[in-house]
Image 1 (tube, one colour):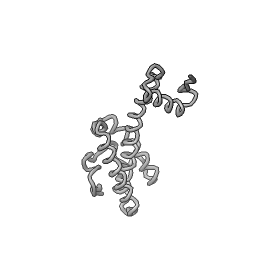
Image 2 (cartoon, one colour):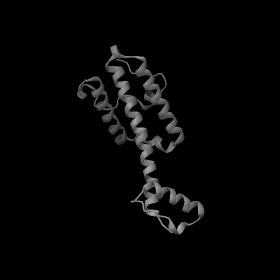
Image 3 (cartoon, helix red, strand yellow):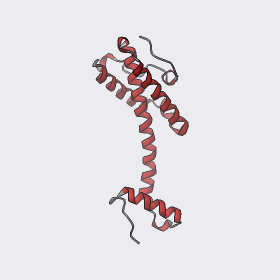
Image 4 (cartoon, one colour):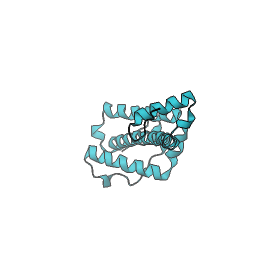
Length: 147
């Protein structure tokens, strides 16, 4: 039997590992790499949540700091990110504790400020040093920060 190595072709390896599981050929399983791949799924879900939160927060900052440039595209982006975050949290409720994790929130905020600064050309130091809105408000449909 020709067993594909993880290092040689990860997609072929994954397909072969799934076939081994389905066939009950557990002796051929590459358990170390399977465990690694399962952990990566969790990391990917966390990254997806963080990425969407960064975009949402950056647009809320833009909304607050550039009131004259507000438009329907910003509103659509805010709504789309909120919807995507809501779906992600419903599908993966184990991500909810991240929303109150201070370290995660700090990282997300820093990235959001950097994105907002880049897109607005406002110095990042002009934005709040830390996340000042409640998570509930940020995720609440229709909520927008005031000037």
